[in-house]
Image 1: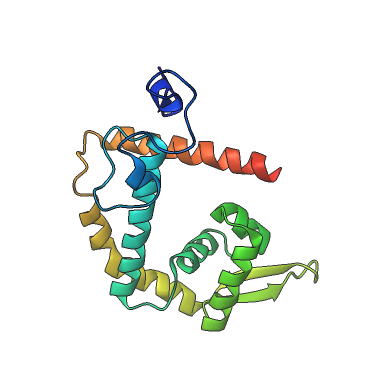
Image 2 (image 1 turned 135 degrees about the vertical axis):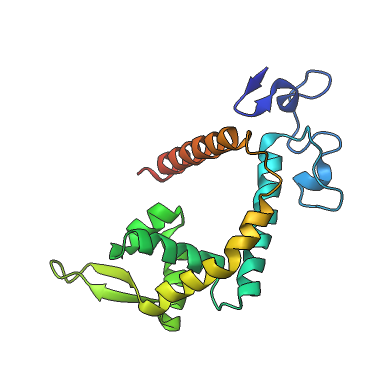
Length: 188
């Protein structure tokens, strides 16, 4: 029986006993982070998703390096959030970007130092600081997209167009599910 991407066999040992902490037989390498032989097709969904996330993160960082841009994936993510809602408070950017406020502060400090973002006091409440993308910040996002768009298209050229709606639905549902779990965990 499947529930939430984990089947009963993944939740119990081969003899039906409670599962031990860790992967099943044959999954140890990928479960613990060894990508040498790749995940097996029957690996638990979370193992496949973590492996895909890790390799996509490396690909994303590579597209930034190929573009020759001095910005981290996290920094580019913050700029994207601000381009969609310029003038947000840091807490709002953290919530929309699903990062912790502490992590966001470090990323924003770097973006400010590089001239991609400005901090400005709120006109209505001087205690509130808002973040704004500079022209230099807008330009780096445009430059990234101009260089990286073909790489991302190539990265997904294996997807059968007939499968795309199902894949999109899965990711939209997954983003919603994990966003809700994070909100509950943070008490927001």
